[in-house]
Image 1: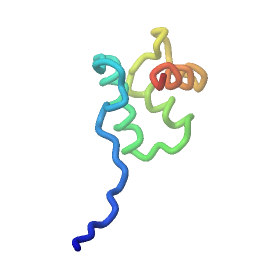
Image 2: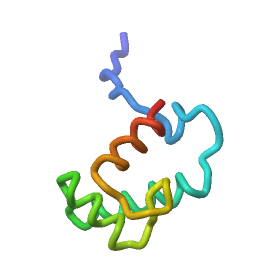
Image 3: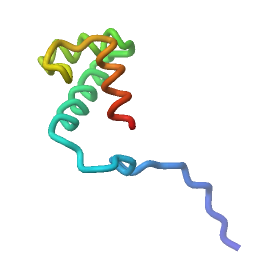
Amino acid sequence: MITRPAREPYLEVHQTHPEPITPYEQKLAGSLTEIFTAGATTLTEVVDGLNALGLHGPDGGPWTDDNFRAEMRRLGN
């Protein structure tokens, strides 16, 4: 009898996204990757990083803790 080790759970990239990724979502994801790679660990650091990169919030203004949370909720649904 051959036994195999248990497989780790995995999630395919974008497998839970209901529709194609928009250019805005791609840019936001790339920006977040850059910010986290640079060492951001807090919400304030993430928001500051988005603003430093010049990526505008969903309303066209600067990112804030509140609109970042709201946008992550919206994108997560």
